[in-house]
Structures are given as structure tokens and as C-alpha cells.
Image 1: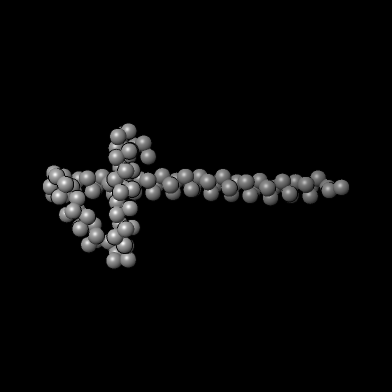
Image 2 (image 1 turned 90 degrees about the horizontal axis):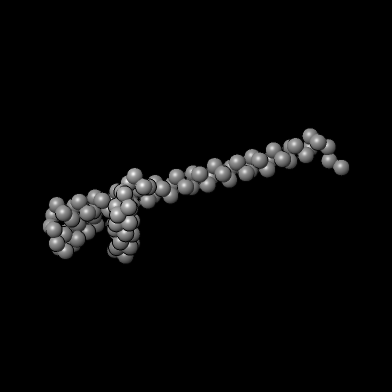
Length: 103
């Protein structure tokens, strides 16, 4: 039979491990919120730039070229297109329900 002090030591280890899980989950939640916030801010900047350049469809072409020129050449056209689309969707979603305050 295990002594009480040995049993307490095992409990403390589980408590520490559980606390690490909770802390990691909290950090993960904060990180996810920060990623969403960054996508939102990028989308907001894209939309503002579109309006500044041209209020029609040609603005997308000009802004996409501008973004492409500022990003690393390691970013493929496909990756850029997918990320830009994700940016637009996240911005549109959160802008429609209250903007950055919701995030």
C-alpha cells in the first residue's frame, strides 16, 4: 500500500500536468484570436486600399500587384490568392458583426 505522502506526490504531478494543459489551451486561444485579428486588419487595409485606388473591380488587380511586390518571392501565387481570399472572408464576417471589438 502506498503512503499518503507518495499519493500526494502523484496528485501534485497530475495537477501540474493539468495546469500546463489549461495554460497551453489559454495560450492557444489567445494565439488563434491574434491570428484572426491579423487577418481582419489585413482585410481592412485591403478594402481601404481598394477604395483609395479605384472604386471598381480593377482596384483588386492593382492592390494584388502591390501586395505581391511587398511580399517575399517565396510566397506562391496560389498561396497569396488563398490567403487573400481568407483575409477577405474573415474581414467581411467580423466587420458585419461589429469589427475588431468582437475578436
